[in-house]
Amino acid sequence: MAEQGSGGNVIAAICNIFFPGLGQLVQGRIIPALIFAIIVFGGYALWFLVIPAIIAGVAHLWAIIDAAKYTSYRSRYER
Image (cartoon, rainbow, N blue to C red):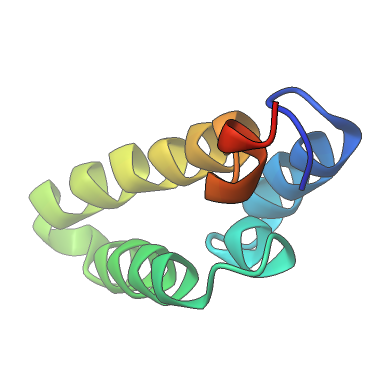
């Protein structure tokens, strides 16, 4: 991915709206994608306990923002 706010980051953020972790996967970040997906789906599965559902909602929002604001290590130092 290029810069923060690039078209790729916007697509990744939109992917995260529908499937948490997919945006990170689109960006090539496998470990964060798995972590976000497990936390969000696990929390949503335990919706009847209320607190895990709230944590999952926060993690879902965090995944969207993380995908939108991502800048790769390489692009930070190539300028």
